[in-house]
Image (tube, rainbow, N blue to C red; front, side):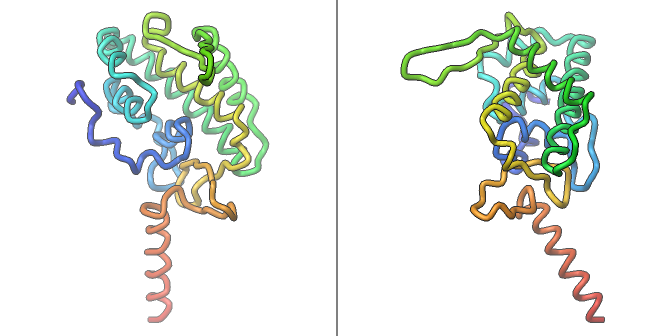
Length: 207
């Protein structure tokens, strides 16, 4: 794998959630109603995704690659997957108007609290405040902590009422349409699949 620049595997079609954290959760879903526990091919693939999501600066990639040894990177990937699936369980329940499961909710809360303990508050006049993380302080957990802060932003910014789950797959998205009736993560993928199924069924019914 080329470790010097983002791979072509992550195309714009992978970023349709309307928020970076939803795009992260969507890395665990395929074209059907099933979750894939390991969508990332390795540590460099995680960094590729983060760079395309705008969550990793160019000068952070090389230090994170240097830190990654076999066991350390595997453990960091495991913690990242745990955060992703716990948060998905929480936000999928919210999107479906179901009771939020307590254990995943607690996991997400703990992830956010831990990220804040490693972050520094930046306040500059005439600019939006931000929680900052660096490689020196967070190490291999920089991606996990930065994503947890993205989750905190999603929750705190009042965006959850617009949260929906695609009718065709497990992907989550923010519905910003005027009528709030968006059904698909993307018309180019699940929307077209549904249209093709309807067309096929109509032809079968017509004999």
